Length: 172
Image (cartoon, rainbow, N blue to C red; front, side, top):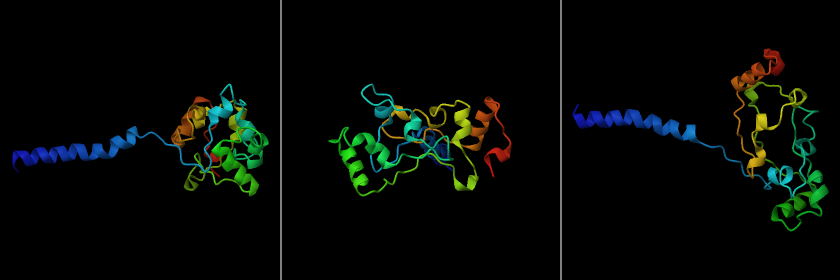
């Protein structure tokens, strides 16, 4: 094999795997397109906003395995009169008139194959803040999956907090 072919082969061996791994290592999550653009910052942090607590909208977090997205009537409780000129609020109002819920794209979930039973309830009792698992949702306009909830990630947290790591706590 000639010297130039050896160099080309070596470069291929080095750069092909890098071309596969580098984009994945530097890839930043993006927020999925939602039927209505919703800005957590505007509702939670902004001095001009209502400064809502997470559980105002995600009211089932302490009662159900799912925190749930609020019913459209909760949103319209304010938006029947607030920011009605906004195109996004107008979309919201159209859903409300049709008595229809937007088809939100779920961001955080466990794969069905993981067979995980999850409840927010013990996490709330442990005084965990939402951002510990969901990241800083108030820092960007859309919610994106900032935390990859793997079993090792959960176990690390349980160990740090001296919570149970018994398999049957999370897997049923």
